[in-house]
Length: 389
Image 1 (cartoon, helix red, strand yellow):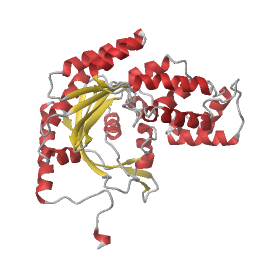
Image 2: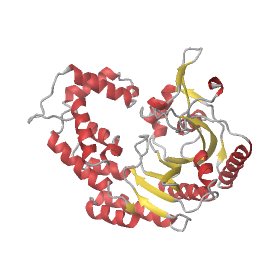
Image 3: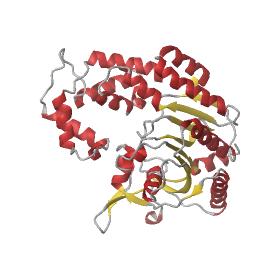
Image 4: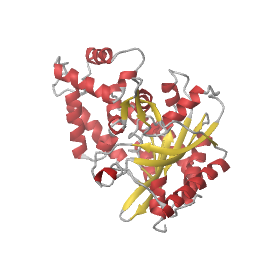
C-alpha cells in the first residue's frame, strides 16, 4: 500500500546489503581508531540556529526543520561538523591542543529533485582540531585516501584552496560585499558567459553594482527588500548584536555601488579564466603560478608541496579545481573531493576541507582555531563497491 512505503529519498535496507553496510562502517571506524581518532556520539537533532550559523544559510532550503513541543526551532542534522564543534566548545577542550575526533550516523538533506536522489545518508567522518596546516592537511588527505582504498581502487581526487580564491579576490579591488557575493557563487561563475550574465543580473537586483555612469545610490525600496532577503538567505542575520535592518542600512548608506557593470563583468571574466583552468595538477599549478601575484604564488607553492607529499598514495588522478569549496561557505584553505566512476558518472565518495574560522564563529568570537575534517558517504561507497570496483 502507498502509505506503507518509506518517504521519498529514504529506503529500507535488508539482509546482505544491511550486513555489508555494517561491515563497511565497522571497518572505517576501526581504521580511524588506528589513526588515533577518538569516537564521539552526537545528537540527531540540533538547534536550527546553530546549523544555519555554521553553513552561512546555504543549507537552509535542504534542512528538515520544525518547532518542537517546547517551542524551540530544531532540525535534523544535515551534516556533522557543526555538532562536533559545538561538542568541542561545550567540553571546554584546550583549543591549542590537537584533538582528533571521529563519528558516524545519519544525516538528512531535502532534495527538490523528484527522482531517485537520497535524502537520508550515512556518513563516517573525522575532524582534526588544533593542528596546523603543515602537518594536518597531509594527514587528513592520506586518511581520506587510505580509508577509501579499503573498498575502492582507481579513485581520483579533486583539490581546491579557498585561501587562493580569497587572495585573488583581495587583489581585484572589490568591496567586501562583492567579494562575499562572488565567492558564494563560484559554481555559477564556472558556467562561463551564461554564469557571468546570471551574476550580473543578480548583483544589479541586489544593488551591489550600478548600471549608471556615476554609480549613484538608488533609494528604490525593492532593492532594500532584495538585499534583506539576500542577507537572510546567507545566514547574515546572526552577526553580533546588529539586526538585519541595521546591516541593511549600513550597506545602503555606504553606497553599495562600488563597481560599474562593465568593471564587474570584466572582473568576473578574469576570475572565470582562473577558476575554469582545471585538470592535471602540474599544468594548473604552473598556469596559476605564472598568472597570479607573488603572494598568491606562495600559497600555490604550499599547495604544490602538499600534493607532492600525497603522490605516493593509491590514487588514479589528482586534479586542481579552484571552484570547489563554496557549497558550504566555511572553508578557509584546503578543500577536496574523492570521486569514483559509476557508469558514466563520477560519484563523490568523500569530501572535506579546512575551516579555521568556524570555531570562532560558533564560539562567540573565540580565537581562531585551526581545524579541518572530511566525511565518507557510506551509501556511495557501498553502491560503487558492489560493482566490484
